[in-house]
Image 1 (cartoon, one colour):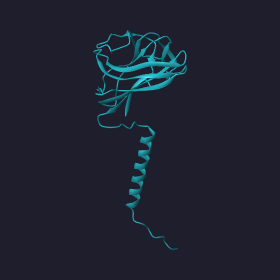
Image 2 (spheres, rainbow, N blue to C red; image 1 turned 90 degrees about the horizontal axis):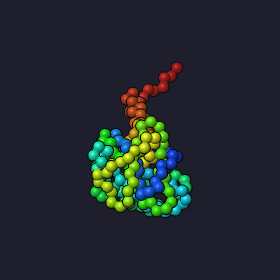
Image 3 (tube, rainbow, N blue to C red; image 1 turned 45 degrees about the horizontal axis):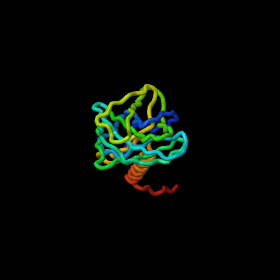
Image 4 (tube, rainbow, N blue to C red; image 1 turned 45 degrees about the vertical axis):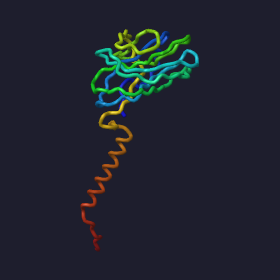
Length: 196
């Protein structure tokens, strides 16, 4: 699996006080593939149930690339991560393409919040409109101060990727080095102990 987006456990409060579509623009760098899910960090002003769904847009064309299942989430007043699976046919991911990853809330009466982290290179996009069918194409407005905590998980065309520095990568390296050392030792003849 590969990921693109913002995986930080941000605590900034991105308001979703209408039927708001909101998210950020991010670029995959681990090759082409197929999108599996979108994960988003959410909370409510008071605990309760809220309906959400997510989608992926092409930043250059504003065209809808794919959408996820709709879920009724039981949110609390503390941020947590929630995952939405793409429906078939799952969208293709093109390496190096800038996408907008978004979540849409079916607002009723209680404020919902999308977490964000600050910093340079703000990616925040939003659009207000009645909850329903995904706009296609879409027109976004922008915030200049935040990076929404939302990301897309996808399967690269060549299969799962192992990132350098990961536990799995380190384990594989250790196993390989051990095997090479064992092989090298076996190249030398065993010496009999000398008697003095």
